[in-house]
Image 1 (cartoon, rainbow over the protein chains, first blue to last red):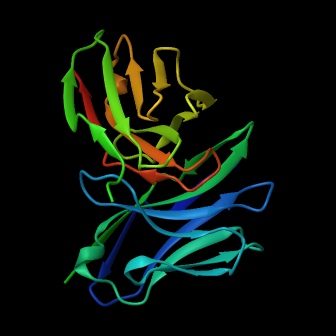
Image 2 (image 1 turned 90 degrees about the horizontal axis):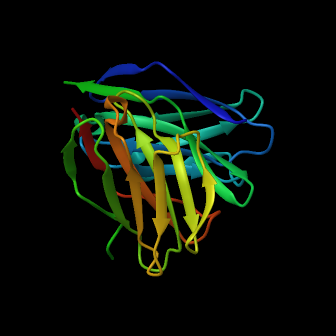
Length: 115
Length: 112
């Protein structure tokens, strides 16, 4: 079975600093990987996705992630944090089996941005 | 274009009661998936429906059931509610069973 591990349940950065949120996955097949953001009392918004094309994926709001097969990682980065980036971030992997597709999520990383 | 909609937004139930949550997918989408997100955790897969048939089920007890209607909307039913069922229930729609999933805002269920 596939799984996702997000290192660091809480990350705090200063406004303007680099954001780095870590995600490692376990998969026996080439994975489809996703990063979602969740603002308080809201659903999930897709930031970006990797579907076996370019290994460096650019998403919305200035975020990007790099797929590294050798490290089984898909870390999320943003060069300069903004106050509005404060939210919970989830890494997920698609698992295709038996005629359906489900997303397997990590436990999430809460990003705090301080002035 | 309207996204995925869910109703109600919030509800409060007591132990032992049952609850029905509703989801309307994006127009043209034929698949609906349900996820449970307990506070402080990532979402957990409950069901996927495609063309009104259950295609997949996660590790949830039989108290959880769902169905999909001819217009592709869906209901999630939970019987004999337990305190541990308190969570945000997320619905996601996709064109087909293997396509990208788009999430709704969720229904916050509190069981007292």
